[in-house]
Length: 136
Image (cartoon, rainbow, N blue to C red; front, side, top):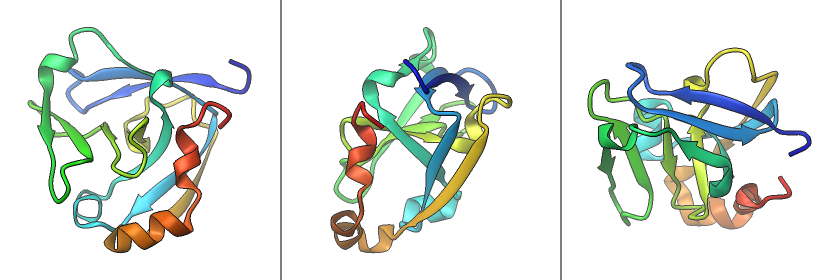
């Protein structure tokens, strides 16, 4: 996978661990929806095939949904950290919390705002749906 590096990361207590293949330079979305704003979520999106939850991690996950119940927010049952989730806007992708990536593999992080308070209009006006496609 040319241009991609393997980033490792997970939750605060280390029970939830994963690997993700993504560029060393990423564009992260800072969303202002009610959930993301409260937990200060800043994340980048990758195709689901590039994300690998490590063995034993699944037993420590708890699921939270709200609103349309399409986004799947997965939290560690022990420390409460949401290190990744399945976004409503891109159901074939995984949204990785940039601050949960282990140090050393991210070279550059560019922040873009996503107006989650006006989700439908923001999605229609943005190009984020392409972020889960393999060519990115």
